Every structure is written in C-alpha cells, then in structure tokens.
Image (cartoon, rainbow, N blue to C red; front, side):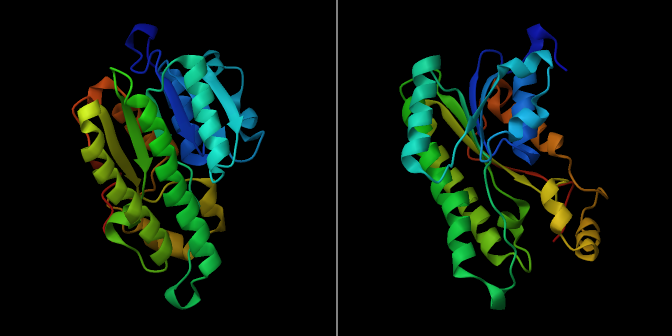
Length: 252
C-alpha cells in the first residue's frame, strides 16, 4: 500500500460503475487506497457492504445503488456528485454483462441487453462526466473497460466481442474529441480474469482458454485495478486513445 505522501490519486473524485464485485470492486478498493474519493456504483444494493470492511481507506468509498441503464437516474447521480464535490476527476466505465452464445443460438433479447449495458449506457455516462470535466481546468481521465475478445474475437462470443469492440472504437473517438479539454480517454482490455463469472463456465473450456495465455494463468482482478490506477493518475498524463491489454500475453 502507498504511503500517504505517495498516493497517486490523492483528493481525486472518482466514479466507478459495476463496483459491487469482480474487477469493479478491486478498482474501487485500489483507488481508495491511493487517496481517491470513490463513488462506487453497484447494481445490487448491499454488495459493497459485504466487502467494504473497516479498513481506514475504505471510508473514502461511497456506495450508490443504481441501474446504469436508467438514463435520468444515472445523470442525477453524476450531477449530485459534482454538486457535492465540485468536480469529477476520474470515470471508470466498468459495468457490463456477458452472455456467451454460439452464432446459431444468438438471442436478440440477450443481444439488446448486452449492447444497452456495455455500449449505450457507457457512452451516456461518458457523455455526462465529460461535460463536467470540460469545464474544469484540470480536465480528467476516463477509463473504459473493454476486453481482449473485443480486440481479437473469440468463438462463441460473437455478440459480447461486438460490444467490447464498440467500446474500443468509441474510446478512440472520444479521446480525439476530448483531448483539447485535457480529458484523457483510454481502455483496459482484460484477458481471462479470475472473477465470480467464471464459476458458471465449462471447466474443460476454461482450461483450454488458459492454455492460450503465455504467462500460464488467468489475471487477478487486482491486476486490472493496478492498470486502472496508473491510467487514472498523472503517471499517464500524456497517454490517451490507447487500448491496454492486461492479458498475460494471450494468443487467440
């Protein structure tokens, strides 16, 4: 853990979506450790309380239960944060859903759900936060969580890959549009990551996928969070429009 004088996100106001569990949980924890004031948006009320505990730095985490697909609800939350804190420094668009279906079995309902959460809502939240950041002299940092399958594709994940490919594309466009306001926009593309989602995955298929990782193991959520902390901080002050794969050198 960083010493107080070394905290790279000290006094930064950060919003993290999908923070109830998995990668979002670790990002919220990492940002709080680094001195950030973290507004952690969870889908299911109480998820954050389960892990928040009593550590000193967790007092910097404010849990907010919300449906990111409800445009007005999320817009009001973001405006309330701005009103309370006077600024927004960092946004992490992490919330997402994954339904894996082979081409012949693709469900339109699941397709619409994934695009709504992974793409449309992420763009809206980026829009709301960037409007605030544009009025700040210091600008801000926006980090969109995509996936290695959005870069390389994967059998059985056509729609999920398409949504994450869209995240990568809008990251690059937003970076170009917002650079003049000193707003950096980057994406982290995790490879196979050891989260609760994997409990429902076929274990034989999982082993096969791990064999494609040259470093021989899955990523831990904390390793994705470390990359997010770097991109959120001034250590990455001249980095924008980049897609950083945290995948242990995955070959697909």
